[in-house]
Image (tube, rainbow, N blue to C red; front, side):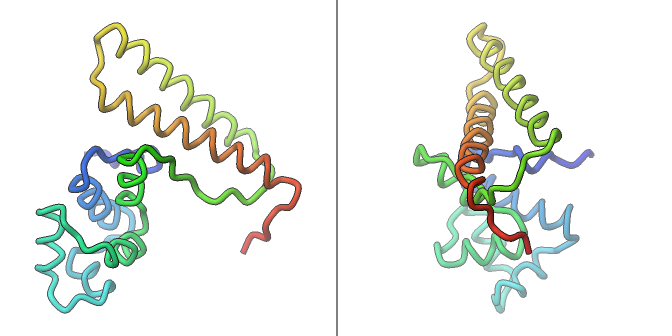
Length: 155
């Protein structure tokens, strides 16, 4: 099974966001649920299994969970679910050709998704995820251009 393209993955439910974080931690960092729970400070890893299966994790634990897993899928889902965009903090660094090409690819693919959706050959869920990704990428570039006058130091 090939790994997902995590940068553009948009979870459709809270449970899929929680499961996605767990899968990312397993694929990218080789972390088990037991290790994730231990790094979060939980004494019993079965509690984490319960939160993932029910889709009900206490809000204060979400940040710790995402930090340990290394991806913010729960925050992405919450932002998208409430009609907001979640973007990485722009640093004002100069974009290179790969950044612009990635944006162009994303915009081209979402245009294709929209054409397929309106021709009734695609489902709403992947179309909405593509639109969300494209809007977030454009918002990041907007913020990066605004920040370009006073770039942040890269550590």
